[in-house]
Image (tube, rainbow, N blue to C red; front, top):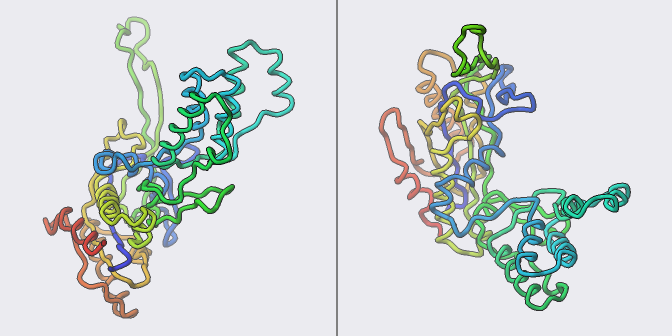
Length: 369
């Protein structure tokens, strides 16, 4: 089968603040010596894997990424009648399988002696949190629940065998697509099957300020006719280029050889990339958008992004048409000089009505057996 599926998308967003930096400004990058808007790959992947598209297609095969898994275990043990003392100890052991739990300092432990029962318990729960996010597959979560039942029934601490909760073979599509790293047990790491670039505007941008006010509905203005609130936010509009590369062989391998599930995962990823917008400040800007242009190619050739097509900022009154033209010219010239032959790509062009998302999903998943 063709190993790699590559997608090149052009999506236009109106004034928005999809992905903010530490100052609340839209994220940017300098490319071609001019400022561009940017949406990080982390933001995009988060939006896709938590989308309704993923949930509807893959509801039973989505993992959970959290730092507070140990706290959830503690609560379940307590609900089943295990003493709080044992529940704390056992939950910490279970959480420790998936990462390094946080620990109280010597000073904090001394302060526990002066606290009331409720305050003390809340502080002790800190040691059940992991220092880093851990990604739990559905199979691992099921294993944890089974162990909780066993501990509650037997009221004995977990054995070494009981704590063998990590699974090398699982069917969590989000872990299979985007990977997992466990620093303490690298045998259970998962190499990501999907590589996602940061989306970047194809043209130069200027981040603008939106100064706004809010009026008090009950103010009759007899004494004060001014605004009850003054605020400011920043925004920008842009046509973004996004590149994705999916290794279909790795995806299938990550899903324990399940070709049907790999096909569903690939379809959900492509549909999400085409239709799901990052959620940043959507209520303020309503900036949801579908991709206006996608070309999808598959083959065994070494993958390559075509961001170089936009090293020179796109200009003119019809940026979308110009961007499509630059992208296609770059693809054809790149293929020519390197002798790349991935066959005829599948194209979706909402501007001209060419192609369809159904055709693209069929093209991308064909031969995935």
